[in-house]
Amino acid sequence: MTILAIDIGGTKVRAGLVDENSTSLVRTIATAPGPGETSIMPSILRLVGEYSGYSSIAVASAGVISEGRVVSATDLIPHWAGTDIAGELAVTGVPVSVLGDVHAHGLGEAVYGAARGCHSSLTVGVGTGIGGAYVSHDGPMVGAHGVAGHIGHVSHADARDLTCSCGRTGHIEPLSSGTGMVEAYERLTGELVSGRELDQRAENGDQSAISVLSGGGFALGDVLGSLANTLDPGIIVISGSVSRSAAFWWPSLIAGYRSSAMDPVSATPLVRGELGDDAPLLGAASYAKVFHA
Image (cartoon, rainbow, N blue to C red; front, side, top):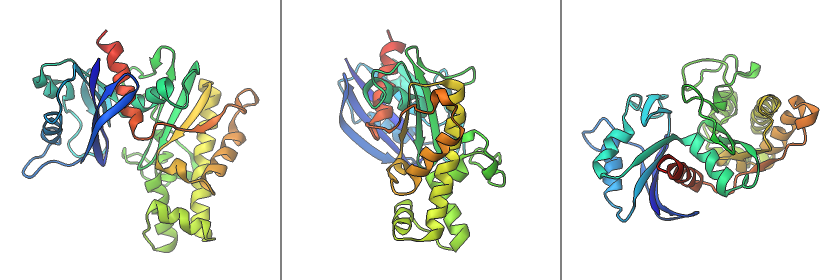
């Protein structure tokens, strides 16, 4: 059974064929409307047209998803809320399933990646924003309104004056995401740098960079400890570009977790994801197999 999996993110759209537990013919385009277009769906349909030989389409999409439609989304993808993804892809003539990208990411790591074999897992993606998913043997916890797992929108005292991408203030995302920490460094120094350069400056002894990475990591770890107290996952998987920041962010994340996790969950493993960008493709395909069964 070959599935065409599509991952629609804030900056890029990736598509590839999934057979069993591997991807092939992966292609990437920018998440942006074509010339004269206001929606990104025409670009996605053109991308789909480059593939053949698949029996169904599995989509992992940014935003809050319900019944194949984007019911809510941040400004990372303009005019995305209200898009009927499943309806627009129905022109292909094959079954279409749509899952939130963070839920797909968590399911991919649970079935094929760092959490395989565990009875439950909490996966946290830390990059441009912060997303998450709790997965058990029953699959990803989606919630009554499709927002379960939106870890980036958990409140934290250190973020009380920061505006989140959702429009609220006080959420962990603008404090601990890659974007949030780059912006924090700019506020401190007046310099706009990339996430990679922020890491490098910290490793070179830049105290502002060290403070930003350490503070962001500790605060997110604090949130994860509280979530572990509530959900008690068998393992916590950290993925995304920020998870590769080893020198200061990662140790601070662990310290923050230990500071708030109760004794029974304090030893829950925190590990890096194994699948990288393929996690949502594999997770969406895994979901499709059940959805279309």
